[in-house]
Image (cartoon, rainbow, N blue to C red; front, side, top):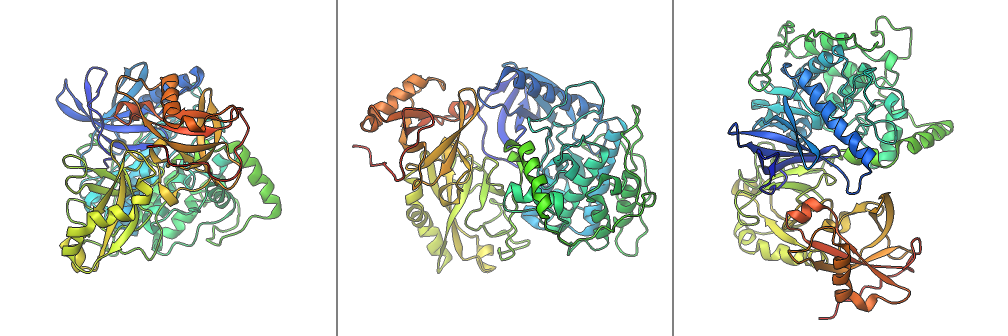
Length: 623
């Protein structure tokens, strides 16, 4: 899935970046051209915060090398994404992986086309479990199985609602672990890494990972695939954690015979969880449609890029290496226990003490990769109709608040872009802010851009380097009841880095790219000389307020703090006094180098920890 165009940058003197394919908490993935072998590859860039301490930098680099080494050990497996090499650029590692054209991750497929059938879900489960089992036999745990880490290629990636015939690849061994390997434990300061909603409960409590932990994540992932929403989806990370620890998932309505297997895979107690061998037998028996015989297990075959997903899923591939960590007994061998039900159970009073302790352990940073899914049952669905045309590629109507990634066929804003609906926290290119109902398609085409420009003017006038855009229905969309022009806002040069306008929530981290004049913030220290800006209510005491923006000359470097401060004083010096000061704030060096050369000028108290009184002090700057 393309998320904007990357700069024409050469990595390791060999790989020319073409465009960004995706981004997440662990890094960014780029489509690149290998100038030596004359082919396209995928390059994973490590995500490193500015000013990261040297010891943390070393841990991140070690993590990348472990990812490459572990994935390379499984490269012959047909359901593991191929890793070719690790190269260095400016002292940092980039992982070179095989590029699979037309691939979609499972999260994207379900978002675009809706839930899968139980048989197709089971088929995907067989392939992923086959890869996990091969890793477990080699002593490698994945630790982050989730829909976004499962790629579907071939027909399954393009067919609405279907995955049969497509090839399945498990990706991102970036947080994988070899138990008792003697290598450093690659974790965050909270003690573990993972994605909320798909993380095993014992991992949230700080228990060391095991093969059973991967099986729980697989069960939650398959639940998402067949139901269209995650088993523990809640509005906030804290509510998600509470549900993960103390509640059963809602009873599945679409899973059919797959339901009992999902319940057993997602047992809270790892000792009561379905074993990998039984899960393989169960899922394999569910891949057949009614009246067919269950497929026979066959050995895995090499060449992941060219092998289609077999009608008869492969058995777990035997691999040399240390024996896997001990799994819990299969349900048949386990001692008597309560049945796995689907009834939701609220935590008791005593449970809240456990929640509080776990929240202190987790910390805020672990949840950066959480995927928030659109679950509005009233959202218009157009099934196979593309409401905005083939170029745009969406199969359902956009609604206010949707965030999108965009791939522009030529220059930005000239021709309609290819759009994908994405999580608003994953560096979106644009966001839908309004809809305009029109009486005719001709009116929408003639006046749409002007109408959207007017509707979004209040938001665009307070931001920098953004532009409104009108997405008009296609003729097929209009004929199928799509009567609204979607009014979007896009970053002109780089991604928005998050939601904009009223879709931002108080307490969320805001970046220069999605900030607005008049915003009020409190700051939170992340690292030395590196602060996060959290959006707060201006009617309450606050530390900072955005006055406006300055554009840096081409010669100015990203870290020219004094020069940026001077630019802010020149533009907004009327706010500066003996009791009030100004600050210059820019965000990321990579966006700076891509042409986003703007800094926000902030009004602040001179002493750290002091707060501005309630109310806005912003007035229009002098002409």
